[in-house]
Length: 403
Image 1 (cartoon, one colour):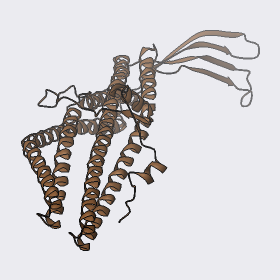
Image 2: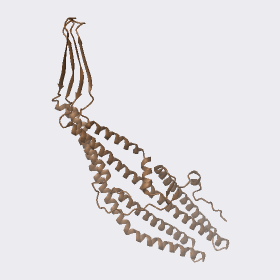
Image 3: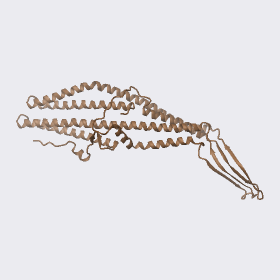
Image 4: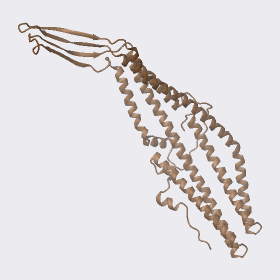
């Protein structure tokens, strides 16, 4: 009599307890937790602060920081005629015509880009969560199939051993059944390892040791093309608009800002003369230098083109992904009825072959073939069902729809 080893995830359960299935967790709750744990989440506040800072600049009445200016002249070291002069005041940088409005537009573009980026990040995290849940439920489904296959192999070994003890089966058949069971036990261990890996990825993403009891399922979104309101496209379009506004801001900065100096002047012409005080005003206006302005804005213009290219590339990628997913969904919808019938027939053949083997009507080889075919057909059918649901979530993810 052979001794069966209990293998149902023993090693993995010691090192990694399986997730606890609960009913209360919703996808929205998991998405919120996952979003807060992802490293890019810290960028949201930084981008908001950046937008507020740029908007604050555009609300100011001057184009930069004022500067205090003091000029003192004394001829004591040179001619020593007793002449002194003191100029002091404040220099204020001024906006060019339309520059303040351009800066306000730039601040608004930063704000829009920040919001769009956060929405796109939420969609990306939702995609990661969808995949993590799909991997988990696929793993536990395949593990259940392997566990059933192990039970079938153990039952077959029991039948062969009983026939062997009754003198109706050869020892070679017992060894074959035992080898089949050992192989199936290895398959079950692989399935358990697959589940452990899926659970770890889910725990890293959400920070939880609980997972929804029911598999995550979605209805197919009613869309046949990529909308312009897709979060990824909106984010990239906002980046294009931001870079366009940044080109104008860089161009104005390269041209330089006019400035006005307002202050006072105190002058003394000699030792015996008194001081003469006067109000001082001066204006500085930069002009010319077109080639320097072009060179200074070249990087900003390059960034604008890069943003436009990224937008066009994303549109093509999303469109290509959508058509590919649609094709796969159509193919699976035609295959599922066939696979379901095959799985049912294979299970019936396995049941009949097992009963006939106990009666001595078929040999061991046919029983093994029937059992393997039944398990293979069941695994293929269940895997196709899981793939169909995965493709539905992938379709929704591609068109930018959250659950």
